[in-house]
Image (cartoon, rainbow, N blue to C red; front, top):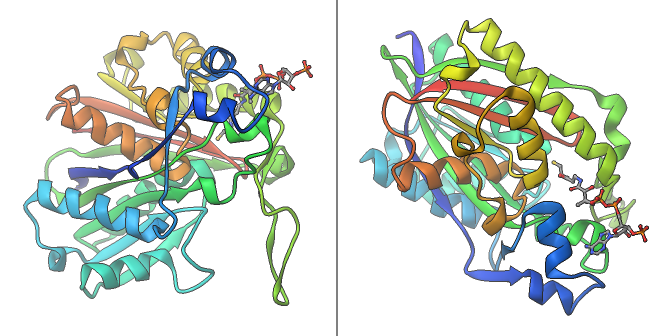
Length: 319
Ligand SMILES: CC(C)(COP(=O)(O)OP(=O)(O)OC[C@H]1O[C@@H](n2cnc3c(N)ncnc32)[C@H](O)[C@@H]1OP(=O)(O)O)[C@@H](O)C(=O)NCCC(=O)NCCS
């Protein structure tokens, strides 16, 4: 066994849709402004009684169905999320219980919008070390729970959802390489610092963002990590069939693709319909492109992530 291979994908979006027109009735904004600056037209919002683990569960069931695997074949669960159901137990343990299985290990991983890339990287290491054979890797976030719907600078950007993949030990090429980075000195440009403190919330329970600083950081880090990873695994960036970036903002995706010399025809974009779903955005976009037949077996796929921390990373995968 030399590789960890993605054998199936799945995703879930809550049924409630929040359109730009809806937002016009909530804050001083306009559909045209939002589309022009972000490319976002609508986003899905988690139901009142729905949780991050509920969405993770639905996405996981779909991935298991596509893999024709029973839940009991999973031996580890990693859930990337910044909006867990509770401080503890982990959303991964709650998901494990909903799936009705026992695993060697199940844990949450928090790297904000880079969470899925960090989780894939971690799962790849567990498989290569021989500690696990079938890992359920999920990105699930209920961003609407931590967004201030009176702040037009942030509430237009985020949506809710979940995406899942099953990574399996394989002799055939799968993940060719990963690269992850972090620089905590940028922590103040994108933060949600509210936390439980002796029975109360201390700090701001909502997302705070310096939009322009985040924009610049995202383009710079995504281009750098893509070039660096491609060089490390000796793959020419022009040979990549599909780029699946974190769906932050269409203009970030376009600027990054332009610097990398990559046509937007090769970039999977779901930001118009999903908004920024944080750790769920990459697996949601990946599943969308697998389902509609664009990403096929044998394709070379570059996943890119960037988010609070600041954290960023990329994975290069042979499908
Ligand atoms: C948030 C973002 C869309 C704002 O776009 P921008 O072009 O940088 O806009 P600015 O913040 O400079 O604001 C320009 C004006 O639009 C206004 N504005 C902000 N949000 C608005 C909204 N939803 N509707 C209408 N006007 C808005 C501002 O108040 C400002 O008005 P002023 O000139 O009178 O002060 C953009 O910065 C962005 O997408 N950044 C990255 C965000 C991101 O991806 N975050 C997650 C990363 S993981």
